[in-house]
Image 1 (cartoon, rainbow, N blue to C red):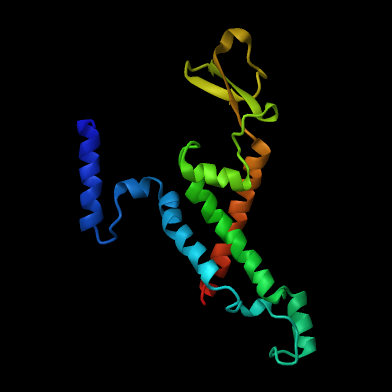
Image 2: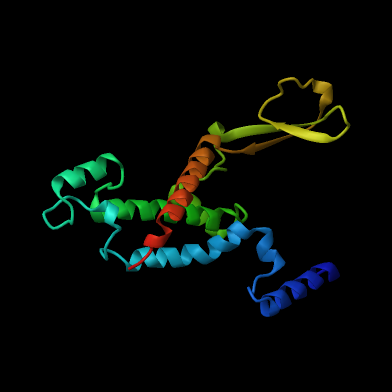
Length: 198
């Protein structure tokens, strides 16, 4: 280990002990991932343990004992204040929330990590080496002399501007799908945060 690395390892160690939050600068650099490492395992356990233990009021279906008249219930449903679906609908919401944190927890590390491989096996691999996923990056020098790159296209780049070309595998469509699901799950987490009870 280099002296510089040792210095930071010791620094982060003491920050965790003496800071009131017990959080090091290292945790703050990737704060979203750090929070996901805390939330995901606990959220997963919460969902597993709370099976059939109730749901927020907005998921109720109409019955004589639901607390609303049929007219009130119908009006609230039209206004989107009641969604219905009961336990099943609530479980679907929780599954979407869990996916968001699972994604952040598993994919923030290297694509060679055990967590990433488990996630990819379950949902699909963005970097799966198939012909459909083949991409190329072209590195070139801009007018200011800085080396920059453009993905998967040589548009507006002449051959003499290209200083390096690299190939890799990347499924843009699947990555976009994952990111949309994460966005949806995080929005639902914020919306239903106060409903996370057993």
